[in-house]
Image (cartoon, rainbow over all chains, first blue to last red; front, side, top):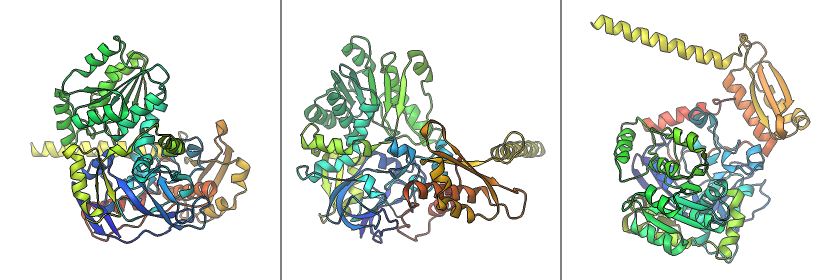
Length: 393
Length: 146
């Protein structure tokens, strides 16, 4: 089969690789229909998560059709159209049983690597390095899905592919930021980042009852898209002081909940960006936490900051003093998709959430490297490149 | 000058070595010199875990005798399974790496009925980075914080 493979730092190619096979009784094999790029892939491509091997298949946000079923699978049959949570959960360890699916005890096959970095290992994820289990990614014609009864969800007939695709990761991740960030009716919420996850976090905050939601970015196309499809108020951080803007618009209090949806390669216009870039390039810190710092400073006293962006290691100049002295709650997580996916598919079917607009570019697997180039550099208004396996280049 | 620098480097190396060795010893031994237990928590009742033949079968694969302890975990979190080598200095004591793998596999089997396997590599193309990743993954299943 054809697949988009990592070949080295900033090197991608589309290759012929062996087809996946059932390796555990609870696996299914899916014929992938659509698979989308994600900002967190850029950390792998750029070598910031050094547990990739040449030939590893990328991609973790996808949907497709079941073509083969393991003997232990009970909820799926050949022909089912399913969307799959990007984190793999066994469904029966204490973490899965408590809806903390990204922390599954039984799906990271290389537990020692992540345990060395974080103290304990998170669960496995598709196409996200050997530190996260060594599972092949979804930018391929076929993919093996372990524990499919718990991670694959039938798509209702009224939800078309291009909308359901993003329920694999972006939509539940965004929802989780607002939900676990504790957004309540009447709250004011600020979301850093107008990529797919940031847009979905803003929409989730609105659906959970927030009275005002601000979305912060600098890319004109993304700000316009957020305004049009999500309905939040937008702030262009390259044109204003975000802290002052938020104080002015919130009666001087600051937002009740701040959601960071940017991650380890954050950009900003101030000197902090230069400082972070230099330290990251010299490997004196692994991640650039610019948006997290800003969210912590902007948040109201006693408020909550939820870190949704993916971070891999350590950061510098972290404002711990602000957390203590302002009485903030800081939370973060990878996505517990299984907890939300059925509810989100239902909301998409009812048109409460729109997602199809996130796919700004659609192309074949053969265009893997070009698709990531557009996505990484935000060329041509790219928000998400989607690989469609039924297209030829 | 060169002798002084070499001496300083050797001293720094020796100090670092002692610190690392002390940390490794502390990780392996409890405060009173006992060998530390390696433990996992299984999301099942104590009786279910104790009576599950998959645990006893897994422990029987170890290269040497172990002591086993199964207790109820606090807060309705299931059962804590702990093992340690019966004769840690003896020639037939299982390694910590082997005990961790057995505990993890037994936990997964009891909870889910299987031990999930990673996908095989897509390529046999040898690269230095790939060799390093493969070396890490060979060891990774037996490492960690049990």
